[in-house]
Every structure is written in C-alpha cells, then in structure tokens.
Image (cartoon, rainbow, N blue to C red; front, top):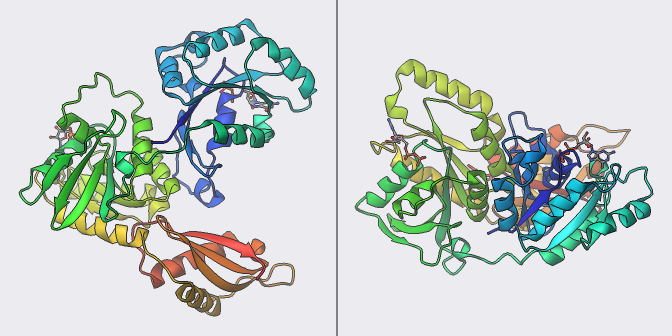
Length: 437
Ligand code: GDP
Ligand code: GDP
C-alpha cells in the first residue's frame, strides 16, 4: 500500500498548484496525450524512488471555495489516513487566524507534520519563515509551487519520513507465478458480477487472502492451471460481506489497486461509453505503466447501432491507451470470459517480457537503418546500443549521441517499431535515452 501525504490549508494558499507539481506526469509524452484527464484530489507522486499518494484536501469539501470546508469530515478523514500532513500557508498573506485553526485540526490527527510556506518567490524567504514560526510546526520549508521551486528539500524530507513500502498481501512476492490482477471501473459497471462469475465457475478454486486490510481486499483464484490474485475490487469486498456504508475515497482505492497490480482489467459500461471518470482512471493506469485490458461490459443489452456508437466512442476517446486490447463482455451471461483471460495472459507476457541487450541493440539498429532521425542544426542523432531497464512496463534504455535532439515523433516511431518487433500487447513501453557511449 502506498503511503499518503495530505495537503491541507485554507483556500488559495496554493494547495492545488502544489498537488499538480507533485503529481505531474513523469514524462511529457503521457501528460500531453489528448484524452488523458486527471483526478483533482488524488494523485501519485513519482518523483522519489518510492511513489506515494497525494491528496489535496481542498478538493474534498462540498464547498471548495468556502472556509467551512476546511475541517470537513472528509478532510479530517484524509488527514487521519495520511502518513504525513503537509500544512500549506501563503507567505504573501502572512499568518492568519485560519492558519492556526488548520494547524489545530491537523494536530488532532496525531501525524507527523511539515509546514510549506508557499509563494516565497520574490519575497525574503527568511523573513517569511520567521513569521510563520509562531505556528510551531517543524520542519518548515520555503517553496514557490507555481515556479516549482523549493520542492527538492521537501521531497527529501518526505523520503525520510514516509514509511518504507511494505509488500502487503496484495504484493506478496512469495508466489512469483501468481499474477496480480486488478479489476477496476466506476460503480455499477459490473465488477462484482464479473468477480462472482469468476469465483463461481467450476474450474475456479478461490480463497480469501487472509490478513488483508480494509484497504486491500484480495482473493486468490486458480483457473485452467493459472494462479491469480484479484486485488481490491468492489466486487470482492461485497462478496466478503464487508459492509461499507459509503464507498469513501473510491478513487484512492482504485489508485492503490492499480499500483499493486501487474495487469489491470478496466470495465466500462458499454451502454454509457467512455465517461470522464473512465478516462481519469485510464490515465492513471497509463502512468502506472501496468498492463491494461479494456472490457466493454453489458454488451448483451445493446443493438447493432448502439454497439457501433460504443466502438466509435472508444476509438475516439481511448486513443491514448491504444496499446490495450479492447474486448466486449457480458459478465452477467458469461460471454467473453475466455477471451478476457486470453487477453490478460498476452498482456502479462508482454508486460513482464525480459529483453537481452543484444536483441535490443539489433532492434535499435534495424529501426535506425529503416529510418534516420531528422537533421537538427546540421547534425543527426546516432543510436549506438540499447539495454533493458526493467519490466512492467518493459523499459528500454537507448544510448547514443545527440539523443536530446530526437523529436517526439521519432521517439514514437522507435516505440512503435519495438512494439511491433517484439509483438508487445497491452503494455506501455518506456524508452529512456542516454547521451554518450
Ligand atoms: P488552493 O486553493 O490552496 O488549492 O490554491 P491554488 O493552488 O488554487 O492557488 C491559488 C492562487 O495562488 C493561484 O492563482 C496560483 O496561481 C497562486 N499560486 C500558487 N502557488 C504560487 C506560488 O508559489 N507563487 C505565487 N506567486 N503564486 C502562487
Ligand atoms: P459494480 O458496482 O461494478 O460491482 O457493478 P455490479 O456487478 O454490482 O453490477 C451493477 C448492475 O449491472 C447489476 O444490476 C448487474 O446485474 C448489472 N450487470 C452487470 N454485468 C452485466 C452484463 O454483462 N449485462 C447486463 N445487462 N447487466 C449487467
């Protein structure tokens, strides 16, 4: 489970600016994909070796602009679930009584705190820090979120404070052949129907995973000789009869589930097409680098015209995850299940594919030979060799000269070339470029 950092503070101090700075996509390629939308409250910061969750509590109240929302039930709960509370204040406004109130609320949660004195750009930072020392929150940092300044020391502090990620049950590495599969989607798309169908089939042997916390409910199952761990789906929770009056922070749980999975099955309701919320979740799957299979569920209820509509919607809105297979499914009637498992396995194989340095280098040479990068200021970038940089997602490190000048279009060309050559299905492919031999 990822630890969480809660950003709290009165409106307009810069929480959401900070949130964006911390959760911005690791590569521009992802951020600029048309169709990717982001959740404004919950995100994952990947700027440290170990990722962590960030929640902007400003977005949690019903009345985001009003001060009444400061200590809303949800903000308090977010603070209680956080590993660290980051209190944000505005250096330009100085200390206001609301800041004292925020600190008092945060203290009640008994969590490590730090103070971020924001908007110190163009100000005497030392003076600002001295002013805010009356709040009595240590350590304190001078930052300028909108200029992405001062965040380095904050991240260092967080790295020291946040608990080491413990491989929880869902992340159990003791059975490497057990595939970790998350089934995600909006409420009512049919997750529990699918899970119940999977668990109900004769050839399936299922057992609840002991020791799972309320955050990570998992169930193990075997099917056709393959072992799976299904992670954190509303479906599993319901089957386990864990009553949850309100599905609080479902975005958070979805993020956790995606992060602990190797392959994500994303269910959409074919009758509704692709909603903004679906795109947000898919954007998270893309950034996580996990394998992805998209299922258009409730396919049974549609006529030909509606099916066509749905397919069009998908091809228009899901171009940013075009590497994923898109299947049609009826969880209710059981059609498409066999194809789903086939797709999941293909995806898993691609996502965990191990490359050798020589096959990658040959591939890069072939790609370069087929198409050279454009001339930039009289020079052409050269690609020398490539080696593997990890799996899930498969990562290829490419060495060469002037690689910094490679245009996005050429990087995309390389990616597609490698994807085709190695028949990768359902997984993003990450390319990293290094200059020099
Ligand atoms: P929130 O209500 O706490 O989420 O605050 P926002 O992130 O929406 O920021 C409120 C305003 O402060 C916006 O106009 C931001 O552009 C501005 N702002 C945020 N961070 C900084 C900063 O570091 N320096 C300056 N000068 N302005 C900032
Ligand atoms: P969840 O909230 O994602 O777990 O969704 P549920 O599994 O509870 O399903 C929500 C509703 O959709 C229920 O009434 C299901 O019977 C229905 N449903 C689920 N799968 C299908 C399907 O494949 N076809 C049709 N027609 N209805 C379905």
